[in-house]
Image 1: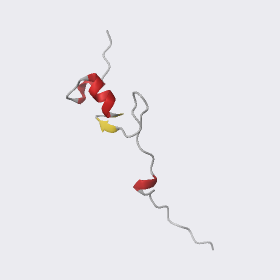
Image 2 (image 1 turned 60 degrees about the horizontal axis):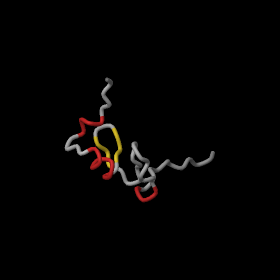
Image 3 (image 1 turned 30 degrees about the horizontal axis):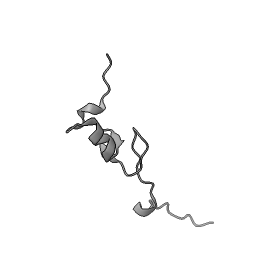
Length: 57
């Protein structure tokens, strides 16, 4: 019988850095349900995550 090796989680250092869902820049932070970089956050001039929801006009 062969021995089964346990599946271990990937160490944080080996996990890919999250990318901004708006521009693709690495190093994004999760706001609400979306990853966004500092530049995109500042460009939108928002102080809360409510602006992530796109409004239909």
